[in-house]
Image (cartoon, rainbow, N blue to C red; front, side, top):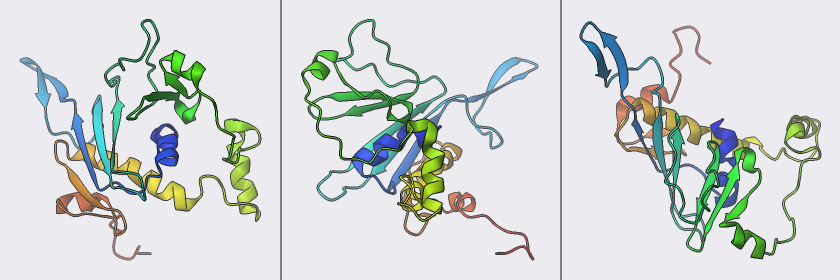
Length: 210
């Protein structure tokens, strides 16, 4: 789901490759003869929950930015602007800006300024981004039309490649928790922890190289 959830962040903030990624994971637990014990090392399964922090460089006239990912039931701190009784939600995005905050759901659905009083005061700008006819239920047709020579798909490889690589960089950071991995996206290489690069490129068996 990560690609669906952070897509509006990538689009709005014009993100590309992160320059560093760091993860903090919950401990793995096993039950032995003396009861439950914590296992720090477990390379076979994902943790129960994690927080992943991505650092992105400045882009044009946009400053550097940090993106935080929460999973396994963990949530960010409740925004002070969110009205009492209003749910934070368990899937979506919070944009934190200098002048306010915006919340939206998965796929960027239902973006709202918080508090709602600010949303009521806001004057929406004209729509300039092309829409897919049929909405989120018809995005496959957008890809089919591109394959048949139409306009490039809204999530073409130029865009979806760095987006997907960012997501799997989070998986890599989860495998090496509590270590900031410095990332060279253009060369697809972790520059400060050589052992992490074992999982960046597939190692083909002899005779099966492409």
